[in-house]
Length: 230
Image 1 (cartoon, rainbow, N blue to C red):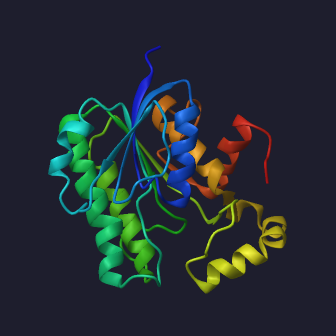
Image 2 (tube, one colour):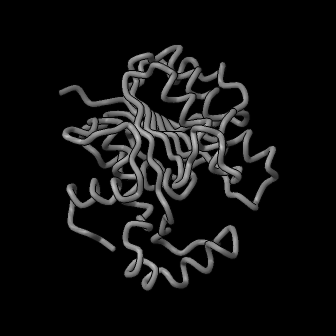
């Protein structure tokens, strides 16, 4: 089987960073293009970096996006860290514009999208994050890629220490062992999530329905790959 060409957006983020590391070690992946606004800080023979400061216009990415087999899109931001207008721009506009640019030159590519629990494609939710993630999902599912996989994790455990973006994240990290024990289907490790997003984009999801995977589904996918690491 020919090794796949994979593009990762948001590889400097928590989930995207793990997706990048896993993809570089995956023998089914022959080349990885990381597209983002900052350097990832990793050197690897498989890796090509493309710095792109403005995702509102991805026309300049036509060359690096040409001939890609799959994409893992993890670009995003946190509620409460940016304004609601900025949240919609990053969550919806950037996703749709990147998908447009990718499909124009790699129409047969598969697309793994990092959404979130509670995403509402109907647009009825009062929660902006849920509405905007749902809007992005709806656009992707209508974009006519060969395969689209939407991942809706609940609380994503960072695994490695980091500066948490909000008080709620600091609280959840502090009580994670108890929260995981009480609500196992409301948590997923960041490294496990990155791994299944890459696997879906590169190899598909045989014997699993889709294209939307809730947190419970993601944990089942992780369990089928390797023993629990939590």
